[in-house]
Image (cartoon, rainbow, N blue to C red; front, side, top):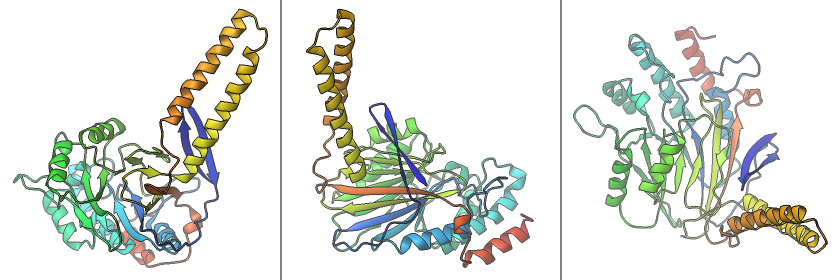
Amino acid sequence: MKKRLVCFTGICLFISGCASTPSTTVSSVPALTLFYSHARYGALTPCGCEIAPQGGVVREWNLIEQWKKTTHAKKLYLVGGTTLVPRLIAPAENSTLRKKAAYTVEALNALGANVFSPSLEDVGLGAEALRALEKKSKFEWVSCHLRGSDGKLLFKPYVQYEWEGYPFSIFITGVSAHADAAAALRELLDELPKKARFVIVISSLNASERISLKKAVPEINLILGGAEERYEAREQLGASTFFLEPIAEGRGLVRLDLQFRTKKLTLFNPEVAYLYHREMEEKKSRIAMLEEKLGTRLPQKKRNEVSRQKNELLGEIRELSSVNFDNLNDGIIYDYRFEILNKTYDTPSNPMSPLVERYQQEFAIR
């Protein structure tokens, strides 16, 4: 079973559902499906866990192929930073790490990756090594602020996608934990055409850094990735930005489905909207019960406690009412899922298997 964490005014609800993929639907509404991974740490094989090892590019291939069959939307596979290198890099290991990184790039090519945003940790391989890897890549490398010793940007500052019938141009860039990241992104967006755009930032930032980035650059619509390892996404119904943090080490993959119903840049999740409605009705029912109690004879101490409870609920209802979730046809509808790469995806065999075998033989990995 898949679990999703959604928080409402201090109350956490776990939404459980089958891990099976959704049914294929055909819609005239412009749609985009994103696959996303980050912090792979160069891992191409399942983790060394004693019980139920997770991850591996063979499993990842099978999951992606399943997901592709369930959507007719445009599809992009985005990759976050710290993908090419392990958690800690020792200078003496650089030669081996560069060889392993080449395998990672080969794997991402085969998996159909579209855009990769390196982190400061990836840059530890050296600018020359990264440029060589970039030449072997079938995907784009982006960062709006990472620079070489010559002061020039190491990679493209962004990539842009435009499709006929879509109300937005999709702009994708990347940022790492660096002092000039927000200023560089602000400058980049000021230079881009002021047409209708949907801005995706692939990040290697922690929670406080992402919040600071959003305040500095409020036009961001989607921030993918982070420094933390988390299973759950952060639901922000009715907001203009959606944060998503997948688990690390290639042990899982995120899928985010977007439907661009109008040009209004407001994100909605119908499932969460339903829960908001239900939460609102439950609070109203509790208030009605408390009002009935207040209409009876109560000791003053008890009356004060009931009044306090009622006022707390009224405050929570005011918070819920501040979220405009009634008109779901007036924005961007989204849904997401996080899938752990377990043995369910070991079969069928696929083109990743020979690559992994070569990788294991060269580096004596069992």
